[in-house]
Length: 90
Image 1 (cartoon, rainbow, N blue to C red):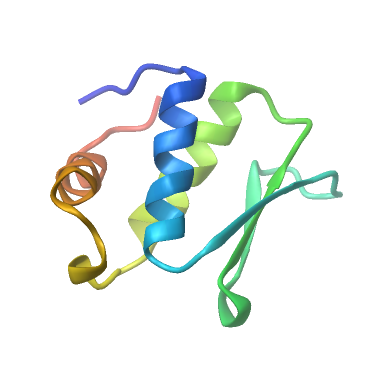
Image 2: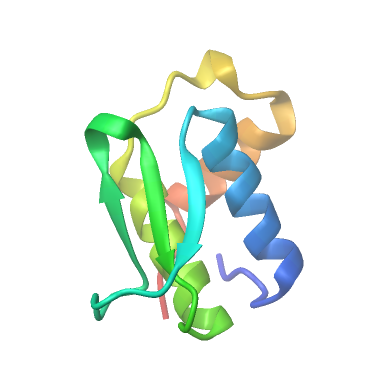
């Protein structure tokens, strides 16, 4: 499955992360990837200077690494999460 590279997709990814307890922040930084994860604080920091494709790819990668409690997700978010697990990145 391939996701459209749109702001709507980015917002859906952000909402999914919020639902599983993460805060999403956009900051400038000295990191080359699109984001970094501070696990103990459950904060995802996304490089605000990354392009849309980079932001989406970084959030998908982080979501794939998490093992959330699916009871926190509504049905649409649960379906979206499962579709992300099968998504191949660019």
